[in-house]
Length: 141
Image (cartoon, rainbow, N blue to C red; front, side, top):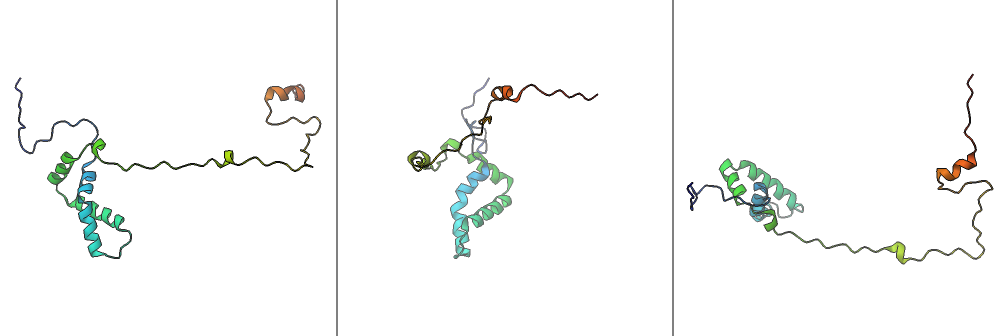
């Protein structure tokens, strides 16, 4: 076996990269975003939704790129771990149900009574079965 210390050509792909990379388009988009934004703002200075126009323009630019240029962006794409990400702040949750006291009934309040023979619900089938009596037999003769 022969071990080469130099790449075979300048266009050779970079050595195997460990881990997931961002796509070639995503890398292209990050590189060209400022350029496309500036051109959109120059064309339409009063535009409010610039982001949508920039994304549309970048898509058109990507479609016009040749295969060699697309491959270049794919090779240069960094690992997903190397791309800076925005850290989201955790929302502060307020547990209102635990902080508010339960309402106290007024002094003359009497809770409703169960009628005699009624089964409180939710009930378990084993508790209800003896109250219902034996199952009916249907004589269809």
